Image (cartoon, rainbow over all chains, first blue to last red; front, side, top):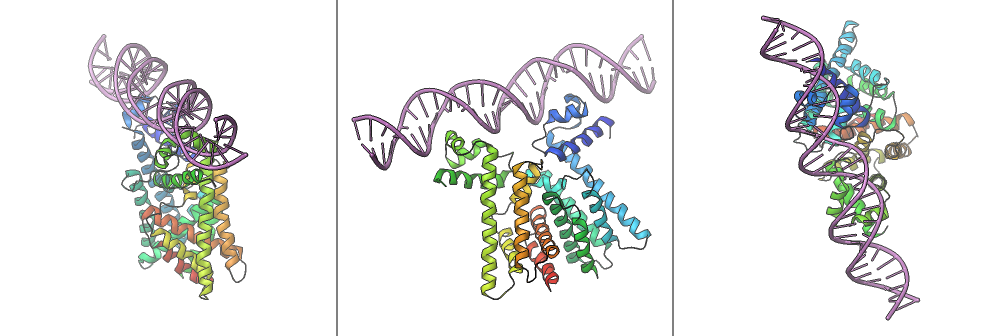
Length: 178
Length: 178
DNA sequence: TACTAGGTAGACAGACCTGTTTACTTATGT
DNA sequence: ACATAAGTAAACAGGTCTGTCTACCTAGTA
């Protein structure tokens, strides 16, 4: 991706997190990124398209972060599934946590047919698929249960500020696996 | 509450659910409720104040719905805690489900000091308190774990359209209680 | 009859929104 | 030296947003 385009996506991600999607105007993104409006509209046809690019990038980021923790766990002979919760624990306790971009996007873009809504569904599904592949024996039900624990931890951390929620969820996941 | 004021709150609740908070303009609420703008601004000082009234009412509604299910369960000699999940199951499968108003509000109003954000926190905390009081022996940790399951079920139902998520969560809660 | 409470319609201000367009500037590679 | 690609600044169009205000309209009641 061209550097300005990438810079726009990075800036927009931060601002969408800090203020929400509707509340973040194009002009603010331009002012913060110091990119001109003409450039933004050369790279993206609309604000919605920029949002999609932001979510697409975030999707990749999150899955890579999780995969890194899984790989580390495997190297140490530990459970990959439980390591996923460490990724979220680290995220919740960083100063980069403003809730899940996809949950937040679904809250603002309510139309199920909206591509923004669709990418959120795909993200959530991808995480459950990844969990399923980490289970010693594939088990859709168990993967969904663990996925549910992750979602619960995210909401608990975001709406109630309970930063250690990922560890609470991890304990619950332990009992599910054994 | 005066009938027009109540009607405004009811209409606004539906529209905020259908379109989100920022995306729902005052004018749409007025058109749908057939109330004049002057009347709205006599009852509410601002849109934010209307949102707060909506959330306040929703807060009461949800707790009452849960309490009804708990009472019914007690009458049948069943677990009050598990009955809470039936409330959510019923909600998810109604045509009145657009995710949790409070999770959605927190997504749009990101400032933790915002009263809209504060009421969301209080709502979530109230549910956990209610759970705690239903436990045979009070247990903050267990109440939070069950609260986490509920949040997870809500997100699963909303972002992935998995309408039976409350029953998945209920099964997990059974193992927690016993 | 006349006052009052509550409501209506609609114009208006002022700000902010997305998106387009024009004319100018820089940098790079041949 | 010159074409091309990429970026800039700024004005502009056409909406939409919240919130205010004026003038009018009922229905009930003292």
